[in-house]
Image (cartoon, rainbow, N blue to C red):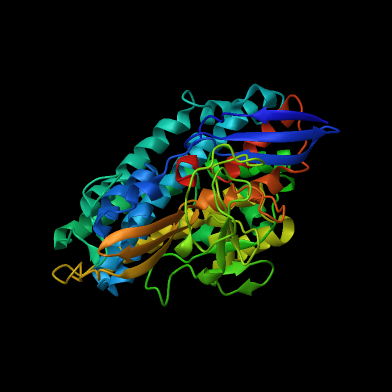
Amino acid sequence: MKRVVVGPFNRVEGDLEVTLDVEGGAVRAARVCSPMYRGFEQLLAGKTPLDALTIVPRVCGICSVAQSAAAARALASAMGLEAPANGRLASDLVRAAESAADHLTHFYLFFMPDFAREAYARRPWFDAVQARFQAVRGSAAAEALEARARLLDLMGLLAGKWPHTLALQPGGTSRAVLPHEKLQLLLTLRAFRAFLERTLYGDALERVAALDDAAALAAWRDARPAGASDFAAFLRVADDLGLERYGRAHDAFMSVGAYGPDGAPWLAPGVYDGALHPLDPASIDEDVSHAWLADDVPRHPAQGVTRPAPDKPGAYTWCKAPRLGGRVVEVGALARQVVAGHPLARDLVARGGGNVLSRVAGRLLELARLVPEMERWVAALAPGEPFCADGALPDEASGVGLVEAARGGLGHWLEVRGGRIHGYQIIAPTTWNFSPRDAGGQPGPLEQALTGLPVGDGEAAVLVQHVVRSFDPCMVCTVH
């Protein structure tokens, strides 16, 4: 057996290293390392609670709106405050715009360029894929970036700027929408829809969202002429390489629920492992037995601590190991769609579990479903009615904010004592997916997904990249 260290990975937010124990040409065990410590939890301690709205968006420049939303929800929870309908709709719109931009960035700039590597030069689709998706030189990147930039005009109108907006508040949003601005928002979304339907899908969003199983997806792919759909191009590559065989983890999926009122979110919360179960946030624990962090027992994040222990024996990462009732769970767009009960996502998981194909298809399925919903949310905005409610924060309080970022469930837990932040813990999506082993020896989702993977030269050398990128890691969000 030999040990191979892969990394640092490029086209990844932050630093990432993966240690692989290789035997007989396949991965026998994997250990995922987040090698950078940041310490946001300590930075927040002692601050005025509303300062969290300024500080936590700096956790990440990609999902800063999701971090803002989780902080705002934690503060609203502590204040007993509910946002008016306009505030909820505007908050949902900016979070959805950030997620849509993230899905687009992942597909065009992070994931697809790996298929333009020389390792695939003998594949029949290589020349076309290289011309379209090669990093920097491919024709797709400029088109996707322009579409992404135009979509983020929505962020400028509703949130002032992106990233690191201050528009999201515990009681809603600070920027009211005027009647003529609803038309501007709709035109922005229509332009984004036009790019998706013309270039990414080569079809109407509603027809993509209506695909209900793997056979329908394959038939849809085969009906698209070569060059008419980037999604269909991916599906052809995935079929040729058998990507549904790689990157399977534990097949337990968690969503904290997304968009809409807490009592009736558009994407429902839950846990799916072949059957649907209710989500109990009280059963979340963080295990640090293999992290460079000091603690003796797993703790719920409301009682969690973050104390660096860089010389800790047996540790190999700064990432904690969140568990749900002791279970390893996977989060992300596929998890959201599976938990929400979309038939295509459920069928893909029933056939091959969470894998490289199903995770990428899950993101693009979600994007096709999300934009029409955003159009409906804009239509529901009521100019002239309140966008934000006022409230006061007690000197002694606690709160929790759970939202879905593009990469999966994000949680903020806040405790206020004497009018100051006494405790603040964050569990970001990549913390779930890239968690290390826990005290019971259970590997995290990516560690499981890499086990058994063929490794070697040529195409086998790229498989690790495909599996890692199918989770779309964000290491700067992971460690605190």
